[in-house]
Length: 102
Image (cartoon, rainbow, N blue to C red; front, side):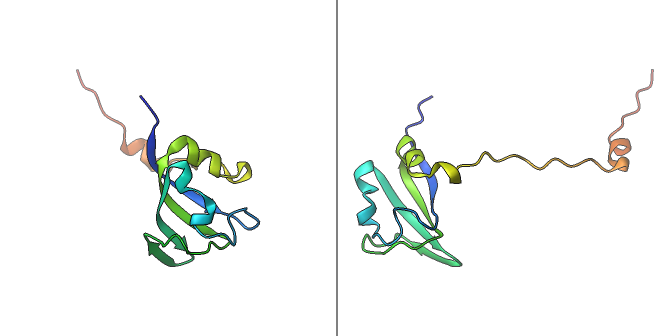
């Protein structure tokens, strides 16, 4: 199965080379990446204009080449998501028990 194209979120952390640049200035488009939505705090900006200047903590929902987008995410912000595992309540184990009769 080819990885090809998909949707991904690019986070713009404090100190990122994207801070202070316009969306056009990031050259995402030249890497076959289109910005679909800009999330800035509680504000959602669909189809942001190329002239919009990026700020720290912005999140860009993008469509494009997955490999190119992966390269846009700073290594230290990449994290593997680990599911939280908690113990089942004692009564949950009994509630799932099934009686088998001959």
